[in-house]
Length: 288
Image (tube, rainbow, N blue to C red; front, top):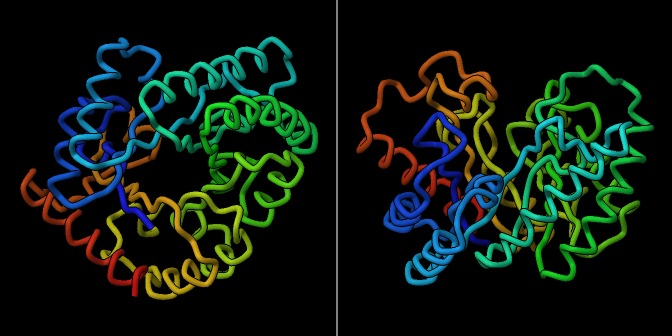
């Protein structure tokens, strides 16, 4: 396993100075920096090349995270919107290839967050499968793994459980299309987080981790030892990426629904120390 974190822990906007965050996560002992994939479409070739070179020098990997807006919904009933969504995510993967980012994770089978104006789940499911099949061809050609994120009922109606995720991936039937499970979402939807991980088995390409209130692992009630045992049981060797959201305000706070400061008023040094402790919690429990 390799361990990382999403840059947004330190900010409340869906963009950032990734050169700065790459150095920060490397200094804190992480193996991976996860960035907003959409930024790759606005970064110049030079900016992408600089981030690639820095990541190589620091010995870290870059993973890319996306929650496509509704205008790029690949499960839309509108064929033009589906085509736009497939084009959007295909273009992202091409930029990822330049960056040497080989993991694309997120709600790529529809849009995020869902507004629930269309509740025809079977139709959206079928359209999503066909679109992901198409995008999977690009992923396979570029050597990128798509980790379809299973999220809770308040964020989508399509994939809410590991069981649904497994069924969706089997319908897509592409070795580069797998699952991303997230402990925050599993804490809402699954009867057992370890059982959900075992159900995903070899289809699990990446894991997002955070407490049930989106704090850093170790600051809440989730059974990290049991989760680690389940990962070892399936011989998981993928990315474990923290996704703590503790700062209110901004586009991140609005989308994630952080309505109060969850950092306990931490200053930057204290935030760094807290996430370093969280990394120790994960390594202790997952690599035992």
